[in-house]
Image (cartoon, rainbow, N blue to C red; front, side, top):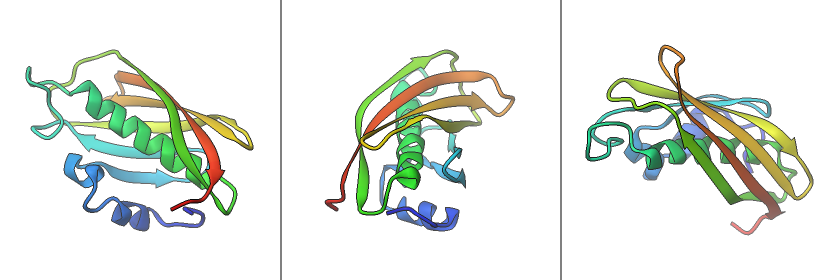
Length: 138
């Protein structure tokens, strides 16, 4: 589904979705690393003016899911089974950068680890997503 797709096309697919609403932008994409950025501003703040943990999880799931689909065989799609996140550091402004790397690429499941850092590389969140690889339905 996402084989041989450009970063521009991936970002275009994000239009009119949560990715566009939160300002998520993919900056690198291949089968070994997916990287993306998200602003820390009014769209991603929680009520105390810091990055909302749910926004971090959206970034993590986005990156892990794109990576999984890039590794999936033709005729299949990846759907989330489980995601977890540990929130390490509060961020008030700027942007965060997420990097997803594969931990396990199997025939029926994949596991990806996502680290989200500040612009000066301080760890904000670490997440892991497990996806199922199923016959394409959509």
